[in-house]
Structure formats: C-alpha cells, structure tokens
Length: 477
Image (cartoon, rainbow, N blue to C red):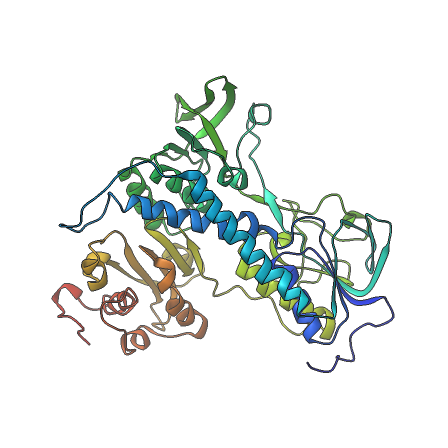
C-alpha cells in the first residue's frame, strides 16, 4: 500500500466518505483505501447497487436462459433434432437469484472484509455540510472529502393513468413468480428490448411501443432498423413513432391506448413493463442544503474532475446521469476518489466508450456514427460488411447482422464502429482500442485475426473500405 498523499485532508473521523454502496462506491472506497485514506461507506439499501442485484447480472443470466430455450427449436443445423416445451420459470428464477447472492457475497461483502481501512455503515445518511453526514441512527460522520455514488432508479414517463394502473419496472419484471401470457413493453431502448425478447423467447406474446422513429434510437440508424426487423421475425409486435395516450387496467389486464400518426390503436396484455429510462437518486438526503447543483433530470452536476459545486463533494456513477453503465460507474468512482484525495489531475474521459445491448443479435458500438462525424465537420468513410461474408457466421449458420466501420477520410483513422451480430459485445474491444489510440484502416488490416472468429470480421470490414470481400479467398491478406 502506498503512503498516504500529503494532500489528504485529515482532522475528521475519516479521510474519505462514500455515500452509496454500489459499483461506483466500491471503486471509490477501494481507490481511497489504496491511497492510504481512512474510509467510511454508507449504504442504507442492499449492498452492491443496481447491477449485481436487479440489473445487468440477473437480466443477462435470464437472457441467456431464454436464448438456450429459443435455440432448442430455432437453429440452423440440419440433423440436430429440435424439441419444444414450456420453460420452468420458477427454477430459472431461482438459479438467477442464487447467482446474484453469490456475486453479492464474493464481489462486495468479501471485498470489504479484505480492506480493514474501510468501515461500512448500513443505514441512510443525510448531509449536514460538505464534510458531514448524519446517519439514521443519529450519529454524525465527518470526513475530509465526500463522494456521492447513490445510483439511479427506474423512471416512468408521465403517461395518463399509468400511476393508478400500476406497472412492472425492469426489477419487478424479473421477479415475477410466473410468466404472463402477454406483455406490453413501453420503451424500445436497451433495457426494454432485452427484456422484451427474453420474455418472447419464453413463450410470452410481446408488444413493444417506442416513441421515437426507431428502436435503440441512440445507435446507428442501420442498427435500429435491422434489429427491429429481426425482433419482428421472432414474433414480437414492434411499433415505433408511437404516442402513448393513456393506460387503463381491468380484471383481465391492461389496455394501452396509443396512436401512430392519426390512427388510434389499443394494445392489450396481462402485464405492462415500462422501460423509459432511469433517473439519478438525488432527492431526500440534503444535497440541496449544501450547495450541490443538479441538472435538468435531477442528476448531480460535476466538472471534468467529477467535483460538484461544493468543493468538498464529488460524485460518480449513475447519480451524475448518462451513460449509466456499471463499468463507467466503476471507472468514475475510482477517478473521483483519486481526484478528491490527491488533487484534480485526471479528467473524466468517455471519448472511446464502448456500449453493448444484449439482444440477439446483440449490438455493440463505439465512437461516432457517420452522421455524427459529419455534424462534427469530419468527412466519413464508411464500410458496412454483412455477416454473410464472415466465415465464423457462415460456420455457425447465423448470418444475421453486419459490421460497420467509420473512418476519417482525411487521416484514415477509425473513429467509430457499429456491430449487429450474435455475441457482438465480444468483438467491440478491438475497434474501441482503434478509436482510443487513433489506429488506421491499414493498422486493422495488417493485424493477425484468427480464422473462424467473429473478430476476423473486423479485418474484413476494414478491407471492405477498398475491396470487394466477396472476391477474397479465405484468410486473404
């Protein structure tokens, strides 16, 4: 362990205090402890935050279970018998819960036990000043610096009748004791589509309603249009450019009244899932009393060093708003702790941030789309390689999707990548490194890519800037 830096503010009971016990909070606490600080962590809810408890860990294991069930019937191999049958949802859910409990123990509780300089207080806290919080028990904790990592919660759009009707959010949907016969999903971004496809593959009749002109609207247009078509081919009823007018609930389920253009429509289902985003947890613990400014959606406003408008208070993770990814939260938590304790030297940098949506086919992306490049005054070169030209996809009998690379026409540097493919998330790291370190088209082409891997598609997509890859032999240089 390194010696405590001289800039750590001593004098309080603790050198550093973390409000929130999720991914950002743990990263901040561990970084502070490694810097020699005496650390307090305050968490009034379940330790581990959203991801391990009600977010990415349970959702991705359920998604994989649904994929396994789907492939019992739907695969591209002749001679392999298909079988059908209803899934055992309670058993699937129990396995999901066991995994959550295991990871909560090994990645959070056991980690805390390894750091004697971190003290956990399992109760809610309210700010007294920029260096003091009062616990629910009445005890006051003081610290040289504080970081807020209070996370976020599901947010529902203000739809008439919705509050009275009640609805599922992402967490409660995964905790259902039995599968419904039918489900309406309001929201066609990552969370809504992941859960919509999961339920559909388990035999639920699913309708998706998205307000914007395409699903996953933050992604490249080709991604959203392509994924919507694949979901429809699996039987999901996907509608975009929708205005939801009101929600009602009766003894036989929900009615969602909506319109597409001037045409009024009604979607009926046993259950309703609202997946219209998340909002930062910033209300009710005194931020407004200590001079911490908030943004338009309630997120904590921070500068490039993750410092708030109160110089003693920093913030990291979902509580500072988009993008709300667990790996971004961990990066931000560690960065906030380092800046708070050693001086503002490192800037928060998301310029090469990779994203993954765990649909099937999956989405992965990094950097700029071609339209975003033009908006920044960059003339883009674009290569779009259908998966039918990737040997791995041919061998797997799954050629859904494409690999799309965007380069700067002037420098030939890779500035963006957008992938729609099975396991797309497993191949986005190379394009991310290309964007981060300014690699060129030729850099990708001249790098060895093992044959019959999806990553080979990155090289083929790079070659497709200048060549017709249909005229290349296998492993062509």
